[in-house]
Length: 192
Image 1: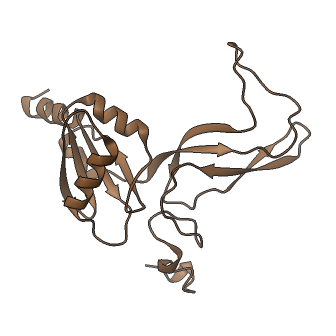
Image 2: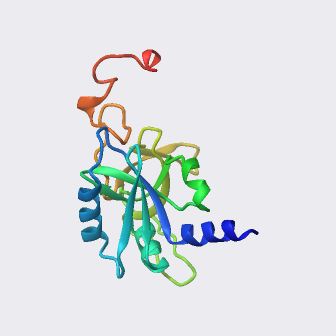
């Protein structure tokens, strides 16, 4: 591995790249002020605009980066921030920003007949809480259909924690229904 490649990987080790899923441009100073207040990192975070609402977040220590990456989802001005970890400096331009993790609740839907327990005796109660990676290029799933042992299925509502603004019309993150092409009556086939 060359010196240049090793240096790029070292820099990337303390960086996150994020895209703010907003229809309009994001003010760098406003973002910097908000995120420093929300994240409350132990050391300073440098934020650099890469254009098109994409930003590089340079953390002074890797522990701060890991805490931020695991603590989301984060949003700015109610718009989702999709964070990714670049493998190297050259990798930044190749980020897709298609997935982010959400904590979701699968809610109680009937009387409990049996509860599975883990080996240590812990059990799942009326609500199951999971952290999952969600493809934000597709509409948010609102119901989970689960097959039962008797070859039927049950519907389980999904509740997302810390959900940013999204479109109630098409279910996509990144715009609200007032900005939605489907809401305005244009069929999907006519979209560019």
